[in-house]
Amino acid sequence: MGFGVGRQVPDDGEQRVADRDDGALFAAASGDAPVAFAEEGVGARDDRMTALNSRVIIEQAKGVLAVTGELTMDSAFTALRSYARRNNLRLSDVARTLADRELDPAVVLARSEARRAR
Image (cartoon, rainbow, N blue to C red; front, side):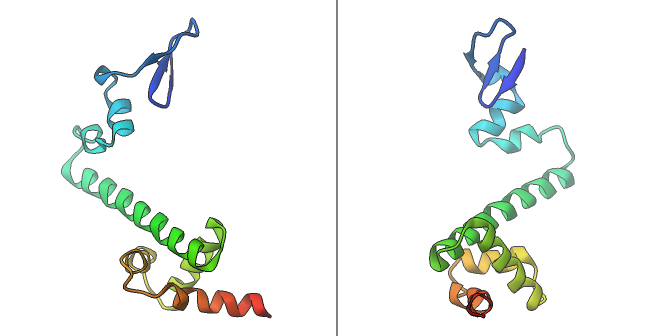
């Protein structure tokens, strides 16, 4: 049997909906990701949850920049990363301040806009 997202595909080609017996697959697909990490140590689980939360915040910040600056998601990430590097800040910290609307997206995009004008 092979696994697809949210379903198990038997060798005979039939599909069935995943159920709670599918363990980690169900946990990941249902948003109960901490359940999937239950067998890990507390430190490893905390590290993974921090990384996951950081990625979510970065995606939100990219969305803010993409909408504000009418950019692709790749260009929004480049602007986000460039701003963090220029200001010697952690990417996740810049992303959080953008997502929380504590940092004006225009400030992050200002240098990107100046480059495009050249």
